[in-house]
Image (cartoon, rainbow, N blue to C red):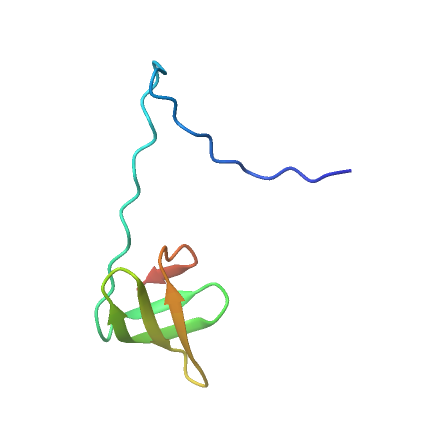
Length: 74
């Protein structure tokens, strides 16, 4: 039996319904405190203008790319 998964529906130009709004990309600056679903608490130590951020999670540093779905700014 196959498991169900969410599918993003494509917008048709001739559809009478409005297209879904574009979600803005989250913005982070140096020294922002963040939490990540996998890595936990961390501090932003590098920013690549809307492409990626470098986070120091204590024992390790990770480069997280946009969109930052699993990361929340505290």
